Image: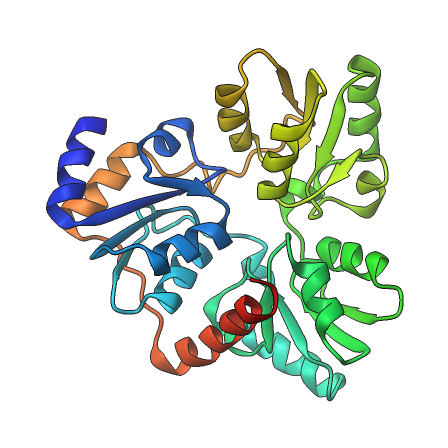
Length: 299
């Protein structure tokens, strides 16, 4: 299947992108592997006719927003993001009406409709920088409450209005999970994602986005790492430094939607031009403005 995909990819002038949380076999066949923000930038910058986005729906939508002239395919059409689905465009409008004048900062893990109602997007890597750069003292932050609380703790002079959304995978990690692993691996460096709950972040050695965790792991001198984000990141960590022990913080750190995509789905989507993701112009234009403003402010 891997060989067949390489041939088909050349025939279609296609680019295969895979998120860090995808199955190992899907990561191995991809041209680029990374977080959603990095992959969307790759999709916008690389010359190709077709983008096969192995991730969840909001990621493919973001690529379609930035590259409307390309054919963007989502190999598994039922791969949705529970966090992104926890808020709607009407919810954002209601927040804006209750807090007039407050800009809306929208986590990139959101639908195109929610992005279109927002003033600027952010990622888990640049959320603090984005909110800090806004001149307004009051800011609406959607949809991830834990990431918003992390931002608020870094910026005590800002009033952050939060929405009660969360990633079910990251939010499922508890303080007890950290304590148990600390007892087993006292010399390990603990790295967690800011989508985890605040009390979990307090017990970590390092807090950062998926990309930040991977960079930190590359530089770390620790011989044992405990990772508090989706288990898919272990594939590259173990491949790049096989001599080092790497453990997942909690066995529940598995995103079922990210694991839906199989190699056969990737092949079928590309072979049959199936499951194209398009964003209508009335949504695409304002959503692109929110993303572009992020790029201009934080890069």
